[in-house]
Length: 293
Image (cartoon, rainbow, N blue to C red):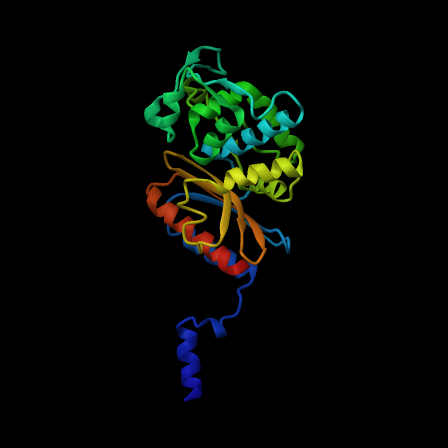
């Protein structure tokens, strides 16, 4: 009878009898989960305590979408630390930018921006910190382009190289159609995003104080459909998402109540069913959380 109860509980996945999977078993489960969805995926995970990692297509290039805003934020804090401006300085909110192709002007379409309230502020001023905050927590394209004009995409790109991120390419702002048509788009890899979030978590970006401020911004992220979606409410996630046609990304630092922390990056492209892709990646996030805890 005892043996019968044991096998019944085991079949139900009763936690007392569950043995923690190996990292290879976890990887196999993740590949199986993502393999059910039509599209391409990349995963980069690093446990900040044990240094254990898990990689799937981690060096493959993806359109960065709004994940490129994290390097822009980092460059904003770097230049502020260098004394080029104060985060409390106010600058004009505008909607006219120059293409990197030929310098011709273009404007952003409010219907393509998740932060449409920003457009009410055109002609007035906002602090650099508030623009950075809007760029990150609601992914304001308008704030992003204003900040890229301020700090220069090339300098953000160079900062990534200095941090060891060799494949992130921050070329331009958002909705530069001429650049897009010439194939000049911001790109990233899961590995490089993992690397820069690890440095933020270690308080090694600009300064410990600046890293803390960036983490606080990232913790206020309003789009929570992927990494945090199926995690307990007492788990904090400092992260940045990205989304364009057929693409859904999430990248950040996961903080557990027991003090553990890990970096997780989930990238996707060529999704024919983005909702299914988001759901699968949220389930992968839950699988990794259960592995770590």
